[in-house]
Length: 232
Ligand code: CA
Image (cartoon, rainbow, N blue to C red; front, side):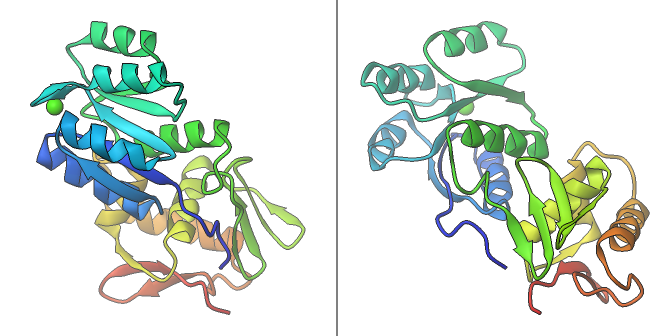
């Protein structure tokens, strides 16, 4: 499986430990390399190392995340910044965009949406991870064009089938439970059940596998769930 060799590096600034761990987990699963900061001071120190993108909480124990945003822009740094904002503070978002943030998400956010926003911003800033073609044997997936194919034949996937395949191809060789796939691909707010995952896997296999009854790419891991197999 060839994939971008140089993963994007993200600085996650968030003082709420629960949110921090949840986002960290989702980003790592998405193939990003993540550094974390829980205070404005830590963030200000760490950001000097250079990142491809910053996820910035505004209400930090020792100050306002907007100050970091403002000082980065004042020094001419144009690294993409996404604000993590509270639902009840719309004025924060306006101020954030005013001082140079690129985008914002509102808590509690839908993790797949956050990851999609990150990829969108990285794409616009010319990143490799977000634009890199994912390949396994003759199967390929283009995250940017949202197209999938086998050799030179294009395959027609529904949006959720595409998301599921992209997620699994980004994390080859790892077994996922149905609940984990629901959380990562559908999001926490999804109220369907494990059967939904099985149905989507079956449809995906019918499209990407040469022999869906003997899948070469999406393997069933008995007692666990599914795994994307990247070895020939
Ligand atoms: Ca906070």
